[in-house]
Length: 173
Image (cartoon, rainbow, N blue to C red; front, side):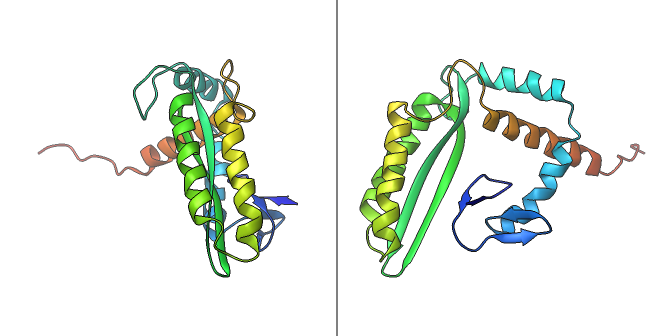
């Protein structure tokens, strides 16, 4: 089974191919440029920032860490249309669980109404969220996850790129 090289989503059908690479959508194809740019960010800088974020305060609730990437999963179905997705959030464990709970309820209520995929994907997404909520899946709180390092690396690359793109300031005159 193919995996999107940008977001890590497993691709069952409809992979977008760009050269030797596979992506889940055209949006991820565009974001792939950031991945290549992120490789120029020094590892030491990434590690320093990852440690600061992991031990910092939660960006959602301002509570104490550890902070990491927590992923919730949802599905929506209507007759013959079924859409499922994963939603990573950088937050504390409590905020990550809240997102997983919210998407488990969303999926349980709105996921069943499509045939045939709604009936198949809904229990999968609900179980994935429940496993995340009870701690069977998700990041280890004692150490930053590779997903957090990847998000930090991309963020640093974006910051560097935006600084490089700023026009030179003119002297006041």
